[in-house]
Image 1 (tube, rainbow, N blue to C red):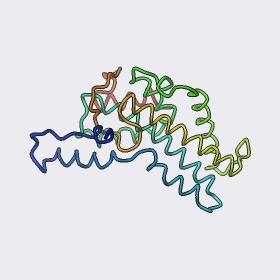
Image 2 (tube, rainbow, N blue to C red):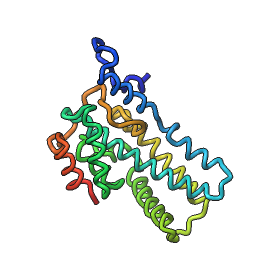
Image 3 (tube, rainbow, N blue to C red):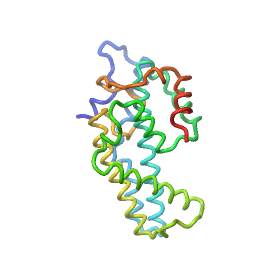
Image 4 (cartoon, helix red, strand yellow):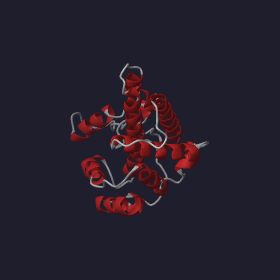
Amino acid sequence: MLADSLRFQKPTNAKPETVMDKAITTMNKKTTMNFDQDFATVNLILNSNFETRGVDAFALSLIKAEKQMRRIFTYLIFQNPSFNTSHYSELRKTLAANRQIYFEGFIKGFNLISLKALSDIYGENYNNDITDLIDFAKDRNKIFHGQITVNGLTRDDLINRVNHIKQWCKNLADKIELEIGYDGFGDSFRKSTSKLELKNLDKFNTIGKYAKFLKTELQR
């Protein structure tokens, strides 16, 4: 199975119960999530009778879309030959310390590392879809602050947007997995089983450089 081939592989001569064995086992357990599993909660909400199911599913779907893009970016970061499982905590803490990085910032970061732009990987309708997602995020922020959205969104409007977000995530997952071997679901701190050709590796080959890269290139 493809999912199995993307997991960390233990060296055949490794001794059992080593620290690396435990790290690999832990990472493998985190790589089993996929699109359907990740959006199962959204579907449960949509199929419920909750009065707030539209806005709840809308907000959660956007969070999942943003998380998917963040994970795709951090997956590429982890492919730097300078990083391994021992850097896991530092890499996570460094990203967490940069709170001014949003959806568009992770796309910019991806494009700075990948030889192929995200728009080329996603394919048809990228410009329209990304514009919609950015507009959806603006509406979500208004809702969170108790403000009225410009279009006065109804429950049906919000559910239609949920389906649009799901379509974006599914298409991105399918296309990006073919390109880099990872769909943006499950833990991103794992190595690809095949070498990825990336650019600007020298800009994030240490934790310090990674922190600077995030601040200067990705922060809003």
